[in-house]
Length: 106
Image 1: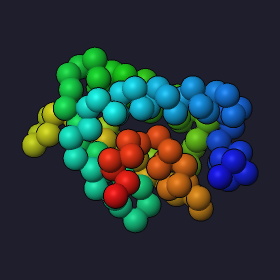
Image 2 (image 1 turned 60 degrees about the horizontal axis):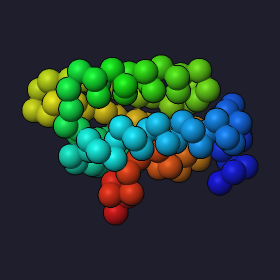
Image 3 (image 1 turned 180 degrees about the vertical axis):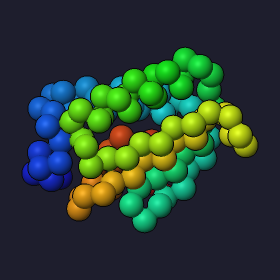
Image 4 (image 1 turned 90 degrees about the horizontal axis):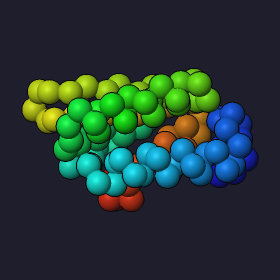
């Protein structure tokens, strides 16, 4: 996966590991439900404005290094927070898989 990661993401290995840890710090404690999509994942999360703000910060950072990744984040509706992360590049879904909780990867 390292070669694919390098092709898709401009972060160094160390910076990627740090970013991966940041995603897990938020998602591991807040994911309520997951759905695998053909090109990514749809997550429903419990949380408040702080969780939403942290997800928005991470989404903005991803826009700088992973332009192939599409992140849709919304609050309200039937779940407190909805997060869709999809890829429009070969191998992108596998990279997204590294960022989400193992419970979402049945």
